[in-house]
Length: 329
Image (cartoon, rainbow, N blue to C red; front, side):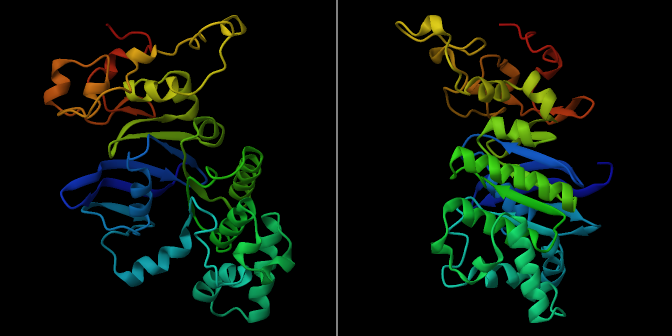
């Protein structure tokens, strides 16, 4: 993972006067899986769509192979579409109900590989259908004839048939049963290994993100507040918001707590002291919800700075928190 596939610099997305994504910077490497986490409304999906130029950006740059997608012409962006594909959250809604599955999967081939004959195109569609765990004869069916898990496999097949360099999965497993989620995740890992593509995986399921990702980006109110390897972030989160996210993960209480009020899992804050209770403030957006805030946090927004190799945090107290227990109350 030494070659930067995608370089994102100072990306900002606005809806009217409201900034949904603010000054986002990161690099994406070939064959890497990056998890993107944060609560609802943090700007995760907006960021993903802006990277693919499905939404307009106010300013910034998104470079792939030396081409800035945000400043490129429509023809230049269109030429890169085969390298940048997305799997949406709702598998059924993302498929045209009037288009047969084979036609939906074959349409990208028709657009980007027009030299293929109809027979060759059908063979490729049959191959990718079998690769995602469906049978080739399903190509003649319509989306409503499939289950949610099957529709998501079809969506993955449509995105993977061009062998993209980057696959964005926007809550791609959140609407599926747990057993089906595991199958889809294993499928994505197999396709990544086979095709060498990078994956941006957006999810609220932190266990899935931990299992799947090499690195994790933590987003809060449109900004990245922590970037670290998956192992490092889950073992020792630094930013207070990251800690709050991990502390909010449900835990099975000990057996001793079954009688009477359940005890909190070890390391979880009491509900009345939870850092997730509060409102946005000036300066650091998380300041009013943070139990470790300083007066400086109310007047100055902390920049995203590297505090250790491969680790970036946007917190005025990050220098105190390489040891996760070093915050002074």
